[in-house]
Length: 332
Length: 290
Image (cartoon, rainbow over all chains, first blue to last red; front, side):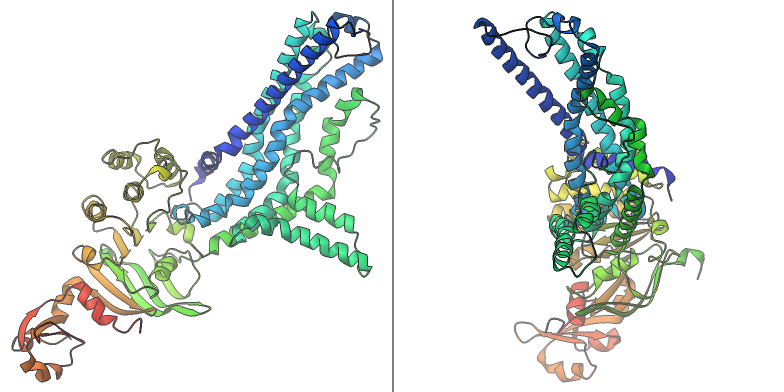
C-alpha cells in the first residue's frame, strides 16, 4: 500500500468541495464586513443629521455617538477601560464568528454527501478502481471535515477580524480618535486569534459523533440521506419523550435530546461544546470578563469530561461502520 | 505449463445469489495471462456480477483467485495490479483533466504520468476541462488515457463503449491493441457489440443464467463449429448429424450450425463456412428470454 496517499486524498476532497471549504467562509467574512460598513455609514449619516439638528450630546458614557472620540478615552474610568477592552475583544470574536457559523452548515452537508453522492453518480466505481482502501478514503473525509475545512475557515475568520479592526480604526481616525488607544491597546487581537486556533482541536474531537453519524447515513442510505440522518434521531427523541410522558420509562427526555439527538446532529456547529466546558471561578459581570470565558483552561476542560470522549468513541465506531459499508455496498 | 501461462483468474464454483435471482451458478473458468477474453452473455446473465466478484466489489461463494489474491480479503493489494473501466461516465462530473492525472499519479505506484500526458495531447482534451463539459466520447478518451498509463496486469472492461458512436468505438479498441496490450497483460471485456470485438479477442466465454456455457480460444472455434447453407433436399440427412441451430433463409434455403462435426462430411450438403461470433451467440442463447 502506498503510504503517501493521504495528502492527495485531502486535495481531492478540497477540489470537489472548493465552494464549501474555500469560498463559503470568504463570502461569509466578506458579507460581515460589507454589513459592518453599511452599518457604519448608516450610523454616520444618522449622527450627522442629529448633530445638524443640535440633538447630539457628548459625554463619557455613550460610545457610539461620534464627533470627537478623543474625549471618550481621556474621560474614562479604569472600570470602564476594562469593559472597553472586553467589548473590543467580544466584537473581534463576533467578527470571526460568521465564517465559523457557515462552517457548521458546510461540514454538515459535506459529511451527508461524502459517501452518498459518489454512489449516486456511480463515480465510486472510478475511485474504487484505484489502489486506495476504503478506510483511507473515509478517514480522508473525516480529516477534511474536522481539520482542513476548519483551518480554511479559521484563516477567513482571522482575516475578517483584522479587516474589521482596520475598518473601525479608520472610522475612529476620521473622528480624530486614536485607534491605538481606543482599539488596539485595549483589545487583544492576537490573544483572540490564539484562542480561536486553540479551540480547533476541541471542536474537532467534539464534532466526531455528528461527523460519524452523517457519514454512516451517507454510506448507508439508498436515497434521501438528509431525511434519514435527521428523522432517525428526532424520531427516537420523540419516542423517548412519549414514553417519558407515559411514565413507563426511567429516562430523562431532556437528557436524551441533549446527549443523543443534539450530539448526533449539531456537534459540527462551532462552540456547541461550551456547555460542558468548566468555567471555574468565572463571574461574568460584563464585557470585561469575556476573555476569562474563552481562556485556554476553560476550553480544554472539555477534554476532561466523559461526554466528549464517549461521543468521540461513538463517532469512531460509526466511521468504522461507514468504512465497512463502503467496502461491501453493491448497488452501483 | 510454463510460468508465462500462469492463470490470471481462476474461478471454481463461483456463485452469487440475490434474493430473487441466481446471478452466478457454480461458474468455473480460467483466464491465462496474455489474452484478450470476451465475456459475452445476454442481459442479466451474470456478466457484471462475475466482473464485480473478480474486482472485489461484491461478496460471493466459491473459490476465486485473481493474480494470486483473494479479491474479498486482499482487495487493496489486488487493485495495484488491476484496472477497470465500468462503462462510460463513471468519472466524477466535477473533476478536471489535470486533477484526474494528479490524483492517479498521487495514489497509483504504477502510473506513468508522462505517458498519460502524451495520450491526452493526442485528443481534444485540455487540462482545465471538467468532465461535465465533455461529450461521452471524450470522457472515455480521458479514462482510457489514464488506464493505459497504468502498468496493470489485468484490465477489466465492462461495456466500455456503451453509447459511443462508431468512430470512438473503433478508436477505443485500436488504442488498446496498439498502445497497451502485450503478452504480460490480460484484458477481460464484456460487451453487446460482439461483431466489433470479435477480431481482437483471443478467447471467448459465453455466460448464460450464471453458468459458463462456452469457453474456447477463438482459433478453436473454427475447428469446432461449422455453418452450412443447404437446400431443402439434404435437410433430413443434415438433421441426422444433430445441428445445434437451424434457421431458414428466403427461397427455401436453410442454414444449420454444427458443433464438432467434421467439415468434410458437411461439404456434401452445401456451402460451408466458419460462423461469426454473433451467430454462435444467438444459437447458444436461444430461448433465454422465452
